[in-house]
Image 1: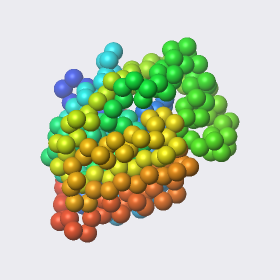
Image 2: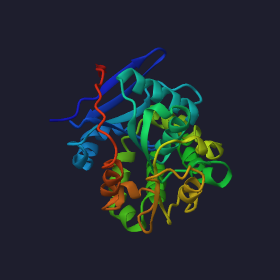
Image 3: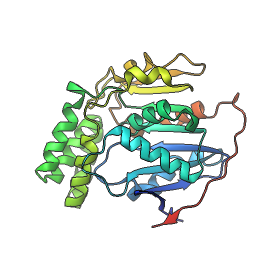
Image 4: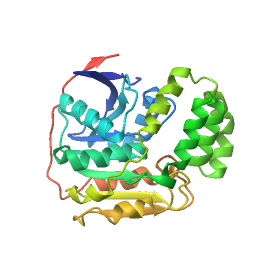
Length: 283
């Protein structure tokens, strides 16, 4: 059965999301920057995280449905927290990948009541200067309405060379389906990462953090994970793991990535936390 895409309606905006699993603990997944919404691949995401379904109820959230002209990370985090409040989700495990990790860090700092354990994959706490260079290149292609070129540049940056070559044709075909509206949305979301900086506030995180990076991260650089790990408090359970050879998208390419996430989130010493999720409108 295909996953139903739901919608959280809040004052001033709405946000699409989907959920799966039957476990008593909530897990929030915040995906990274993408040209097409993760909502279009909901079934594939569920299949990828099938091992989580017994112990967790998993929520995968999009960004707000209608974007303002500027949408910095802090605003995205504020909206995401409001959506989780509306759904009755709190004290949850969080996994944020890339831009989703930036949003997750902001939530962990500003709304610690929402976050019990925090996994950060291929992300950065400082996107100033050179860290923004690759994203700026993508924005340039989107402004030229070169969707195929954008998909190829995006794929070449996030995947290892062999993976990129394997899926080059698929990326071209998907790029040919991109609409101008999707390009405009991508530009706003991508520009929202410019000058993001939360490094000096990471000391405010009060939960175990699992930082996962890659030495061959061609988007945010090989030192981004170490920078985060060096600034979060040394809470019990904190850990860092650095891949080599799986690229920025190690969360998709490393075969044991989700196993590591599941081990981190399934803390045997944590008390059972039951929750009741509120319903939202379907779209």
